[in-house]
Image (cartoon, rainbow, N blue to C red; front, side):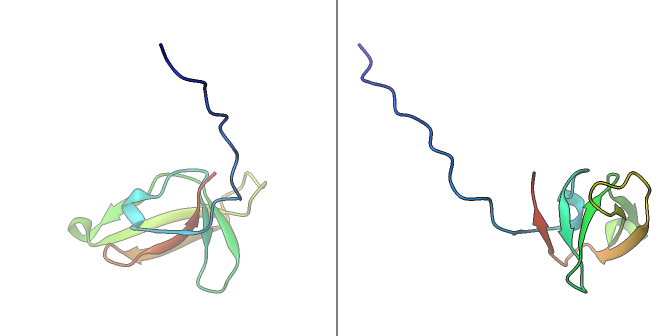
Length: 82
């Protein structure tokens, strides 16, 4: 027979993660090079045989795509996952 169930506790908000550009997903919040928070609007587009990624960004809560960033595949990006 199984023992008593443990309650799942919600921990503190998830801290920033560092991920490679190809791991970004729509809805992720990216901390830009200037410290601003942007939301990933679409999956990354791969260029130069996988060595460069273009990510379309928008302000959180805004539906219009307002920016594009280019990241080399080997650089990590600071992200807050939803």
